[in-house]
Structure formats: C-alpha cells, structure tokens
Picture 1 (tube, rainbow, N blue to C red):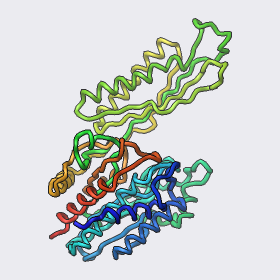
Picture 2 (cartoon, rainbow, N blue to C red):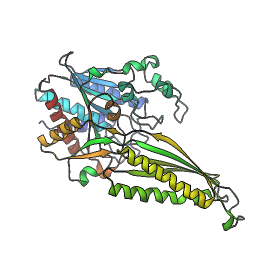
Picture 3 (cartoon, one colour):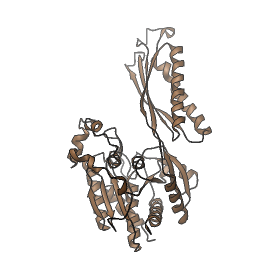
Picture 4 (cartoon, rainbow, N blue to C red):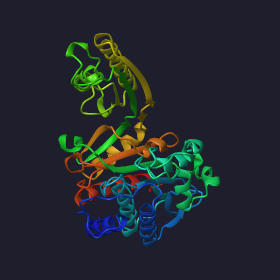
Length: 416
C-alpha cells in the first residue's frame, strides 16, 4: 500500500481550514455555519481530485460517489466535519479523511470495485449549536422530525430553519434527503475513540458492538431559602445539603455496577443550578442533571430507578420536596453482528489487533443502523481527550484506520 502519511496530513489541514493543528482555542465549526460550509467545500474539492461524483442532498449532506454501475449495490462510508465550540480537529474529521484516503489507496492500486462506493460527509452531527444531534444522518435514514427542528434556536436566537436556509437548504424539500433502503447495501463509520480502551487492551483498532444511548434525569429539590446568618442550623431546609449526597451516590453505585456487570455503565451528575445562588441565602432550590449510559437498556433503567429510590430517602430525611423528570430515555443501538465480524476480519487480515467494545458516545452510525447493516470502528486518540483543543489522533493511527477501510472495501466490492 502506498505511503499515505503526507497525503493524510495535507488533507487533514485542508478539511480543518487551517495550516496548523496547534490552535489554542481549537476549532469551532458549528452546525450550518459558514465554517462548516467551507469545510464541506474542501471535502468536495478533495473528492473531485479523486474523480468522484459529488453532490449535496436536500438536507445538506455531502456525497462523493465512485460509481461503477448504476445498477450495482452501494457501500457507504463516512462521518462529519462539524465540531463543538472550541473543539478538536479529529472528531468526525478523521472518519471523513480516512474514507477519502481509502478510496485514493484503492484507485492508486488499480483496484476496480464491482460495487459503487459512496463517501458521506454528514451535516450537523454535533448538538453544540441547536441541542439536537445527528441531523444529517437522521434525514438520510428518515427519522428526522422537521416539526421539532423548525423552532429550535441557538444561543443567538437563530432558528434551525433559518440556519439551514442560510446554508443553502430548501426547507420545503428536506424530506427528499431520505434514501430508500435498496439504495445502500451497508454503512461503516470511522471515528476517534474518545476514550482509552483500545490502548488499554493493547489493540490497534476498536470495533464497536453497540452504542450506548442515555437516560437523562432532572432532579429538582425544593427546600426553604432563608438568611444564612440568622437561621439556626437545626431549623433549616437547605436544598443543597439535602441533595449533595446524591452526587457521590451516583458515582459510587455506578462504579459498583460497572465493575461487576457484563456491560459497562457510566453515570454522571453533570449539571447543577442553585437558587437563589446568593452568598447570604440558604439554597432554597437545587436542580441536578444526571446522564446515565449503558448499551444494556435494562441496566441503565434499573439504575435510574435506584436513583429515584435514593431520592425518596433524602426526601424523608431532610423534609424537602423532590421532583424527578425523565428528560431522555432512548434505547441503545446494537450494531450488526455480521458487520462486526467483517471489520474484525479486515483488521486481522492486515495484521492489526482489534478490540471489540461499546461506544459511550453517539455517532451518525446510530441512525444509519436503523435502516442498513452498519459498523463503527475507532482509532485511538491521545489520552482519550475529545471535544477539546488538545484532541489528537496520530497520522500513524489514521493510516491504520485507512488500511482497515481499504481491506473492508476490498472484501465487500471485489466480486458480486
């Protein structure tokens, strides 16, 4: 296989619209922004250099297709180019880049596929701007709720509808981005791991078996606000004191389950709002947000019930009122077992060690998997850090990821 390292490095900069990856403030290419649009332009430019047919679908996704026969099946690969605020230049980008590199490698080796190969650059994967993730892949899979999307606003008051129209999308025809099931045969996404399991297991590549979707709870505790200096300690209804033990309870109990269960569980008290939040006033109301994730839906829902039971104990002990709202309760996504086997086989075929694992973060592959056999592979990222300016994946690991995609595409398209 040709040396792709210099090509990957050059195109990594192109897709990130930069001449250096060392940016103190990272990258901010929010959904349907001019920065995301410029990155999409770079994607089309690279794809055309590879003599691929490019087009933008009705939802703003970019497609680059190596078409060999209109009647032949199509294998799709890809990821996204948008980022969070001050994010890294590898989350999403690595998947798009390695997909392009895989096609380059196949073409340079004079390989002639018997099936079409499509690279998808999904629009708006991150929820950073509008609070709704994977908009582009939802549109392709036919699961996008346009009514829900229309009125959602970013922090500047711009609606998703306005942003999409400014991006060049016709709001009236977004539904036409849906692909019929017969148009694609399968889909594979490459992504940075956003964790350290690959390295921890002395592996080269992660092959994902399932994507953990969250249960999210809002815990609202109501006590009595009063003066901090004049209210006796034995006559208080301090909402913060009452609920504070829940933070350690969530962490400690999740640790126990994670260490003893068959599948991983993680849980985090990740948001807190105090009222009135004044130095001289006892907190009268506290709102906590809790994120619970496991590929095992029974385990994560049982854990949510355990939290509710503990809150009942707090309520009785501290004489506060506690309301619990379930904000999100999504089934996790189990990926196609045959695709997992093929990806593990692709790794072993080129001498790379695969580690089969779950993903604690969501990706576009979740939506694609609702309609087509889909797979997800991870490459390592330094210290597991992502959504941060210091996010980093080595060129060497991107070469490995590219090689896995090349081997998979060879196996899938060498003959009908």
